[in-house]
Image (cartoon, rainbow, N blue to C red):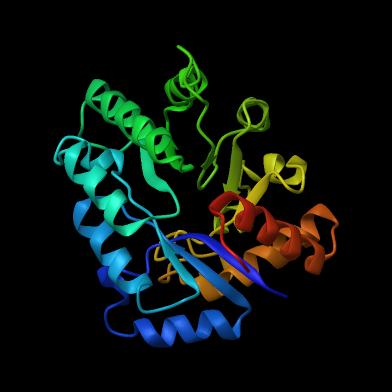
Length: 257
């Protein structure tokens, strides 16, 4: 079984003490490729630096809604993307649950990041919490005024089946984390119905460890646990689920497996 962790943060401080051991455990567990996701200018640089040392890793360039009011969203990000060639713009989006940034500032920055993705012909990794309607409205309007629609994935998908269908209908993917393994997780109903080829898997490490490791630091090796749980719950062959989700990630990020 080979898996792609399409969203992790191994460049975060939580892994400073044992980062190389974590990476080796991931490879041993069959997680053969990792996408390290940036959240602001500092973490973008750290993700790029880490990925430069490992051929099976790729980096992204993001401005998380938590930092939307703190960072310059235009010139510096433009230069970083041109210089480092990330595989996606993200993590970007809206968060009306925890972000200190005003919602209007978040929406402005979100649109700016989508425009950068279009400029560089990159997919986007979208964070959306308690903000589906506004997130969807902005995504759905990106193709207006003669502009090409942006490709993207809603990472850590946590909404319902109706929301998932809306995203799939505009060509988006969704991505599932260890949350699907939690008892009474509402997102599991959507995960059961998500068509193969239209979703990916991720850990969001160091956050959201699957049930067997809940309360501990998450790491990419645990992606195998989520994959097993999801395959069993969906009544699918684990190898097939791993293969198709990995192929989906390969197409989305334009990486060779």
